Amino acid sequence: MSRRVALKVAVWALCLAPLVLLLFRAATGNLSANPISFVTTWLGDWTLRLLLASLAMTPLRILFGLSWPLALRRLLGLFAFFYAGLHFSVWLVVDHFFDWREMGADIVKRPYITVGMTALTLMLPLAATSTVAAIKKLGGKNWQRLHRLVYAIGVCGVLHYLWLAKKANPDPYYYATGLVVLLVIRAGAWGRRRVARLRAAALLPSAARPSLATLSPQGRGPGEGR
Ligand code: HEM
Image (spheres, rainbow, N blue to C red):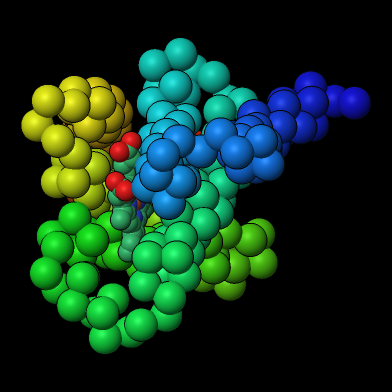
């Protein structure tokens, strides 16, 4: 088995472990005094962890020059979507049992539900375009642009948690700090690339100078600029 395949198998196992553990707890009647809340928060926590893990892959490459994290980004993002879907399903089926009017009222009335729904909705086009065929169809540039939505999803996911958590709970602040650190690393790399491009354009003789819009950083595949 190649190293890359072994890494993916390990990530699959790690990503499925929380679900297996949750099912085990359910089978052994170990879901606390409030099982619905326990299941919702368990799935919500893992959605956010996997979302931030997928967002951390590019900074790992930026900081340490590693290439393998990029191969895991899509997988982690899809698992985040999977857990978000399960998390939402509990709210849809158990909390409201498909009562659309009640759900609409909940979305409008509670800001944390509004941003949670926004995050989930924004995840849909990313999950739908996660295949190689979709990347080809959209074209690398458009795909990259679309997949920048992942930042907005990260922000909405953290806001959702900050809004719903009790003031004394420090956990959402840890996630918020993690997200800010990841975004700062990416913004720094983006800024350096931009400066390098401007310098390169300034150094070229004016006749040979392409417009800045056509200058693209070298060696980056779909999504590597996100
Ligand atoms: C990317 C999308 C989402 C993320 C990252 C996310 C994440 C989270 C997190 C981290 C928690 C708190 C867990 C804890 O207290 O330890 C949570 C709770 C909750 N989420 Fe989400 N969520 C998302 C989408 C949604 C959606 C779409 C809904 C419903 C429309 C929703 C409904 C809830 C509810 C009701 C709770 C409170 C559970 C309770 O305290 O009993 N979430 N979510």
